[in-house]
Length: 199
Image 1: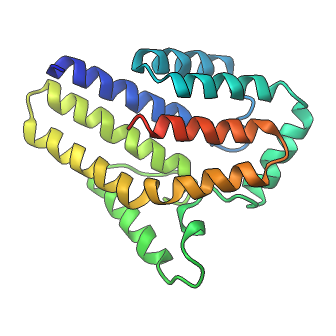
Image 2: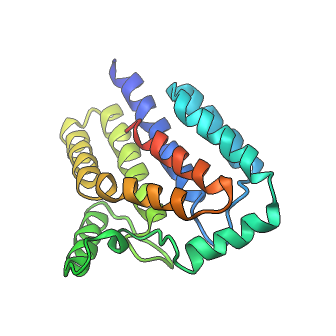
Image 3: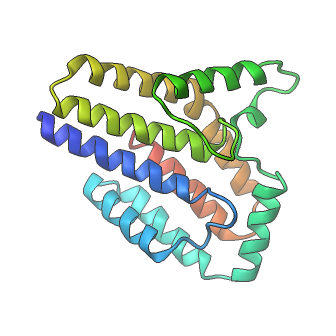
């Protein structure tokens, strides 16, 4: 894969993460707006991520079922913290590492000029947006011929993924599927996992 192709892939991957982050943004992002669905579908097609495309269609279909219950479920699961979208909620019981994890995440964010607004740094949406930023920064570094900058972004993305998202996204998705009464949330979990596997 040449430099331009790799940069294009990274930009598309960054867009996919950013759009998925919007599916988690309060106050009530489900059902997803038609424009977001169209854009995410286009990005996933260009990435060749068939599993994520199928999960996205399942999410769209599921959101058409019982829309009133969908809103109530969003409130119960996310806003009332039945399935909190925060990394530190998934640390082992009795762990004292929550402050350390938050400091580590904040350190990553500071190093790349990323700031959250109105959310704790360990919110899943914020973490996905950060990975999206790293993809875009790496793409532009590659296109600018900045090999060192591209390598820095690639290593940070890999490290952040291994130390954070890869650790807690699977248990979060599993819990979301187990706790949700509305099928849209199982579809959302499948979509997040499918996009993540395209890392």
